[in-house]
Length: 155
View (cartoon, rainbow, N blue to C red):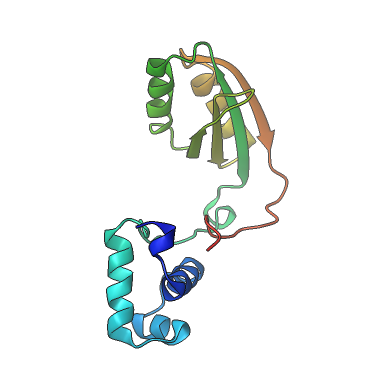
């Protein structure tokens, strides 16, 4: 489904669900100004076409004992397709890495990491990340405080 195929009601549905994915279909329908049955059909179509990929709970990391958030900019020794794919696959095996992007510029990958504390993060960087056979450089950035938390897409 292309953006052009989304009408104003679909956009409202996406905005509301991105803000609160737990609301009932009846509440969602009321918020977007349509009745419940067509609202449910629209949501199902958005799910079936992959516009809505899923639903999840946003967890409070510090309350779960994960007090450190950091970003790692990783440069590989060689940027061959095989090395890029191998490193990308490796990120899937590292629980501290919560999100990973292949990027352009000075680095090849940007990793969003969450750890219990600085020691755990340092151990990961030294023993796992820099030890990876494909890694040439790692630059880390420790966060101070999150100042904005919004849905992943502005609709």
